[in-house]
Length: 80
Image (cartoon, rainbow, N blue to C red):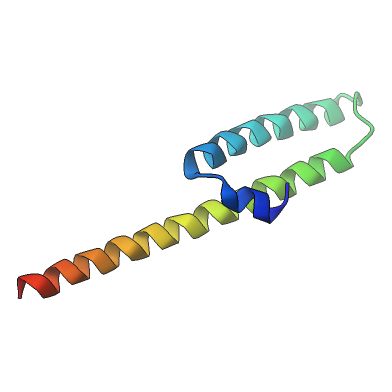
């Protein structure tokens, strides 16, 4: 997955994709441990995709927290 594609998704879809990738990662690890999979690079790619999604989720969380904090500070200013 590319970062641009990931940024277009909403939080719900990102969480679903993260869960799917974590399951895929677990299955790949088991396959590698049982010598059923020779393409170990797939696990590396999956881990990188997981990291990208977590990064975007954290960015979106920070943005929403900042916007909530600004709204609260504006509300406090209006009450004074």
